Amino acid sequence: MAKPIIPSEIVQALELLKQIPGIGDRTSTRLFYNLFKLPKNQRLEIIKNLARAVNNLSPCKECFILTNKEVCDICSSPERTKKIITVVEESSDAYTIERLGKYKGVYHILEGRISPLEGVGPENLTIEKLLQRVEKYLPEEVILATNPNTEGEATAAYIGKLLKKKFPQLKITRIGLGAAFGTYLELLEENTLNEAFSSRKDWES
Ligand SMILES: [Zn+2]
Picture 1 (cartoon, rainbow, N blue to C red):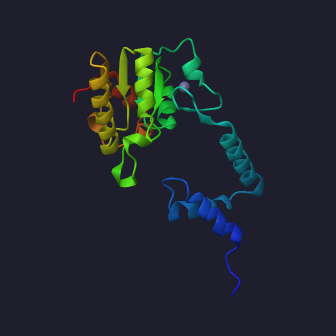
Picture 2 (cartoon, protein in one colour):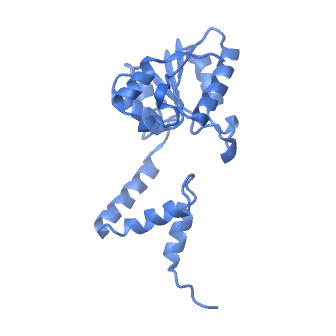
């Protein structure tokens, strides 16, 4: 058998990178080869940092945000109220909202969105845990802040309906979408994101 020409390290690295959801051939190839455009010490620094993040971070026991503690700083802060829960798709969305420095409630991270195309159903998200938290904390408001796009909208609709059925008295709101429809929270400008929150409306099925 002919000896393979491509070094096994490359073949393996590309295969491993492709295990990350949303990373295909093109992205994994670019990530990997572009890494080698950096000096070796910088390359190693990146990998060391990633290893540390992978080792230290896990979902918060309460809200599922990626954190380096068992219960995250937001959930455990006495300055944050559990009377408002903002539901987002990913940790990055919550940290995007945190950058505005205005929100005083807590979050609930779904760990994704309902996406039949990607084989993600409601049972793959942390919806059950959200219902438990609502039951436990009896919040005054649940803000549905999934992404302002088709999948985010469908996910918000599913959760809104479920919450309304189980907790008819609960105030459920959806962030204002306006002209921003078809995008992602993390891509919104600061003032657009502020606007999306301040113009949130009662969710109706
Ligand atoms: Zn938390």
